[in-house]
Amino acid sequence: MNTDIHRIEYMVDKTISVLRNLREQAYTLVDGNHSLPGRIFNGFILLLIVGNVVAIVLESVASVYAAHRLFFESFETFSVMVFTLEYLLRLWVCVEETRFYRPVRGRLRYMFSFMAIVDLAAILPFYLSMFTALDTRFLRVLRLLRVFKLTRHFHSLEVLMHVIRQEGPVLASAMFILIVLIILASGGMYVVEHDAQPEAFGSIPRAMWWAAVTLTTVGYGDTVPITDAGKMFALAITILGVGMAAMPAGIIASGFTRELQKRRKMYQTSVREALEDGFISPEEQKDLEEIRKRLGLDPEDAQAVTRAEFALMCELEESSHCPHCGKKLSGS
Image 1 (spheres, rainbow, N blue to C red):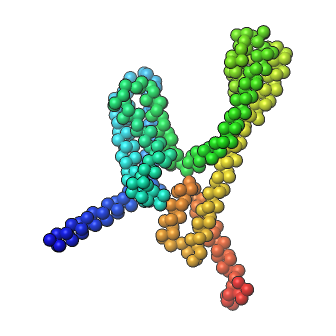
Image 2 (image 1 turned 90 degrees about the vertical axis):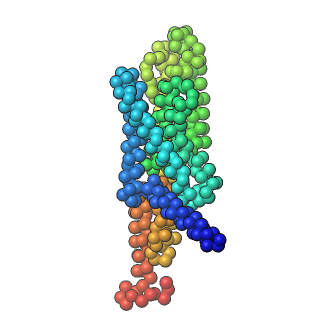
Image 3 (image 1 turned 180 degrees about the vertical axis):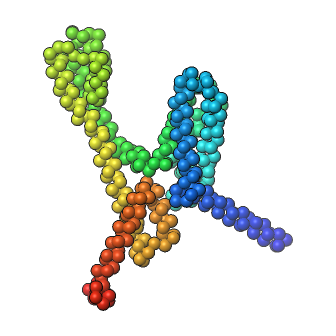
């Protein structure tokens, strides 16, 4: 009886060990670009995403879709199968990351992360079409959300999304100011142009179209003032619009640069801690790689930071010894 129990425990432990090893290998495959299988897998997913975006765009052309309908439907089914397996695989291996290490709570937390929601949105329209009678054009537009899956393969996009979320209140303030200016510009143009052009400026809502395209520096030219007062007012609004259109771009650009500098400093601190004993062990290298991916830094940037910190450590080490005899200086 005891022998059977020990045998069952041994089989269970062995099965758990095998599954854990498989999970580690699968995690290296889906989230690692430092191995050849990982690069092949990520390259395949990247090409599939781009192919899906191109296919969705071409499907909107009725003649093209009618001529190649079977191909588009087969490609869509194949893509959904691959994306579904990818989503389930990432959900299974996410516990390998420190922030998702708990089997249940960690996976639930991962399911509500930005990239997991993007992965789910990439396959959800296909399954919705099986149970609901939604307009195919609406579902086709929803499938375009797959383009956001590219953020996993381009770290700069992930950093940009983080900057937009971080600078959200400032961007919202800029948009509020722009809306206020559109309303004021519409009111002013209504006052000076409504008699001359009642069809274009006969009311403030009608004048809002001109105000919006002028303040955003688009300037379609379909609606223009014809009175002298209207032209002078439009000149002031146009000059004001140049600065207003550049404001959100400046906010995002400065936030992007600031965020990259902050992430490099954070990675630099981690490298310094790893080099305290004079070298980076394989375990420390694995931790640094995970930190690099979490921070969204390119491998080249991370290697440059590591080389700079190693060179600094060697320089400090040499300065603490006598250049002639090599003995450690007493004041060091």
